[in-house]
Length: 99
Image 1 (cartoon, rainbow, N blue to C red):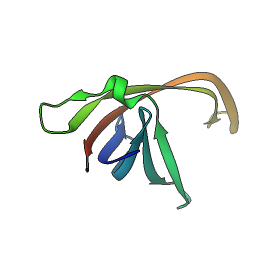
Image 2 (image 1 turned 180 degrees about the vertical axis):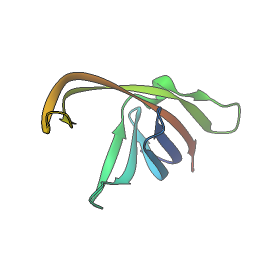
Image 3 (image 1 turned 60 degrees about the vertical axis):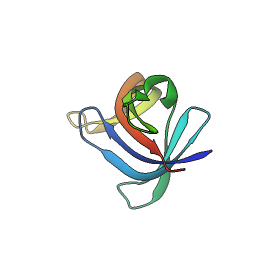
């Protein structure tokens, strides 16, 4: 597990996480806070396969696509939650090794 300084945002810009994270087995682990203020760990899978070197020392960036299954989404028109079988989310990822 290697320590990194990172920035992760959804491609549409609606959420952003930044700070110190950890890179292990091609996955990026980033500490985050929920809307209720509870801490959790956000895991972005397969980061090394999507991110390339920026030409700077130990610095990488790229767009990572993550597939999610059976996601509950609130439908405002029907005023209830509905389950979506498959959803893809794209993240802009930047990280730099802190070692």
